[in-house]
Length: 261
Image (cartoon, rainbow, N blue to C red; front, side, top):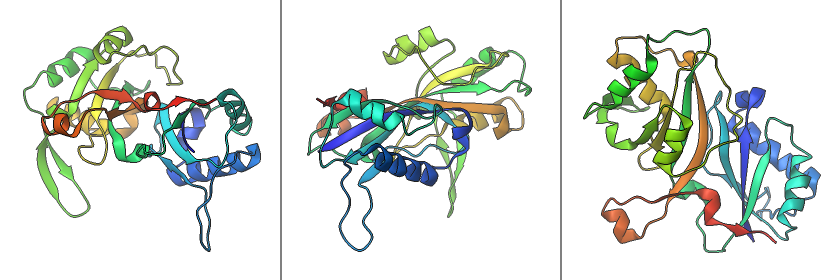
């Protein structure tokens, strides 16, 4: 049976890289007695995969892990057993069963919600909200995207789906009801919520948006000035024909599963 876990990541755990997080969960599952399936061969390993690895230094309310199970327990019991093996800065918040035909989370990620905050002690500009709103009002936002082999100009404006400067406005924009969060809070009050294209096809990191914003106002981009917090990951739940027509219906990954009994 396939199952999908949703978990958060906060505090000092934001400095733990993806491979160590994977090993952390593997050990937690063994200690909790979760009946995870293993691969066959000379070097068997747990059949688990992550939706979209989170960068070092980022916090999150919406990380996902898919797993293959030989047997299951009620969802509440599994959550309790797993969370007892984790520290308070990384906790599983839900577990859903998936159909055997479902695609793994990594292959279907199409969007993500972020909160990007200016950390206290850093200065970006006066009236951050007004200047950022003016930046996003441009018809085109062209950046130079660099890869290991090349660099090219691209307009990132089509990949910024929504933005807001208050949680109430963002909830309305994306049709969500965000309330509880493990995101760090800062006294300066300079932050922006954004829903961006994410995944293997059109992946826009919030750091690129902030870099472009800094260039637009003539300020040097300092990656240490911002705290990026991922709030949710989405799949694009449309038919092949609708996808070819450019339609979009973003659905949180956990809503593609059903209750584990």
